[in-house]
Length: 265
Length: 351
Image (cartoon, rainbow over all chains, first blue to last red; front, side, top):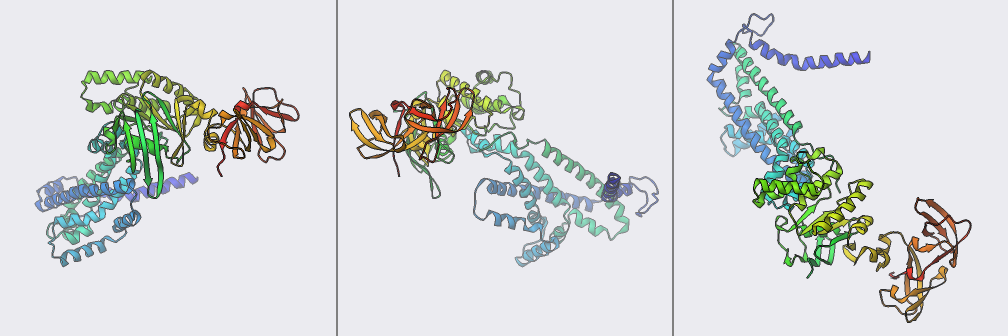
């Protein structure tokens, strides 16, 4: 009996979580521009309209650019920080980690306004570059968390073994460190990309005239007639996100697991 | 000049001097062991020879070439790591081939050398196995093959058998010893396990507190330790305080309190003595007999171990029991402890 209630609870939970999301693709194929049941008929006109809408495609392109640059930079920063934190005994490591992680606990709206004020104060023009800067504050802690976990399972003696067998530092990095860190790096790239791609508040404050996709969506909500097109793009992004997340998980799990059989000192 | 020569090498970590002005000479082709408790500096010394740590002072020379400033990847040494450090993203073949990729061997020559080495460590046909498909013993062999295939001048082994179970460890001791003899490569083993050092090495350096206490053959180390620490660390032993009573030519008599007047050959003293000196006499458990001796005692505890038995014998006036190992029949009633004067180990007494 107890089990059945748990099942009901779990089903209700999952329904609440995913049914609304499924409305996106559902209504994106609905012939009416009003988001209401009953459905009126199947159409792909919104998708056609989507690919004709240059402003929306421009926003999509902006978001992809910001996402890719943010992902690469924050993963690079995270990589360096994670290596330093896990492999060297440095003073103030805990404090430094605390400050790097702090943006996760500051409301995005506060962070966004603060960054806007700073940029205005020093007269830095708003552009996609400033969005990247804002997103770096947000994404680097994620990258760091993913990569630290990866480095902690990394046996330092593997790098020493490589040196012992005649490889210098650079070749050791390419033949040992990088292949073993690759799953972590991939996971970090995907996570930071997605975080940047769907971030709204900071982008809203820092994007200036170059709207990212979430900001563009927000501006379109004022026009009911545009809504189905937004739904169509939303459905496509949903599909891409699911593919990316599944991919990230597959890569993470397929990667070489930290060596459990090794018995250390 | 010896093959590996360590001269007044010092290593500090912060305020701690981990290795204190160590001198060490290892002959070519030797199986040499650094033996000591954990934290004695033996692993630090090994890592300095490998090039993973730089000495703060002193010189390490291999085959007459000083290694100061030479990075690990350019040294003629290879190491079997305590954790084995098998590359988890490579299979057995590529692990063993790892260090050969830069040697400019042709594909066939490389394959032949790796296969031959795999055969040497009895891993034929295992080349395609992944690291996580290997047992502990197999991982050990891969680590060994990967280091030996580089044909190092010195093979460094850092507690190589620590992770194996007892039976496998004993088997690998025999194999390592045979491998070293057949290849003729100088082996330098670091271990805290005295049995491992005694059974494999030709020469053992006992380390404690960053210093080398004694360098000797396994038998000499056991029968002729030069200080209380070495005697205590290698095997079981009983200590008795004594003072030198009389020195007459080759014969020394000592007053050993509860044991009475004990004759000791002069050659048992590896140090200068004079009448009245406080010394430490020591007896190995298997050198003490339970009957026919002169010291009365009684058995407080006995344990039967198959080929021999261990006894704790109490003697009046001594708080700790005398440890005796005997293969004879179990004694009944009081015992009379005895020994051969030639078996007495004499050590300097240090406050």
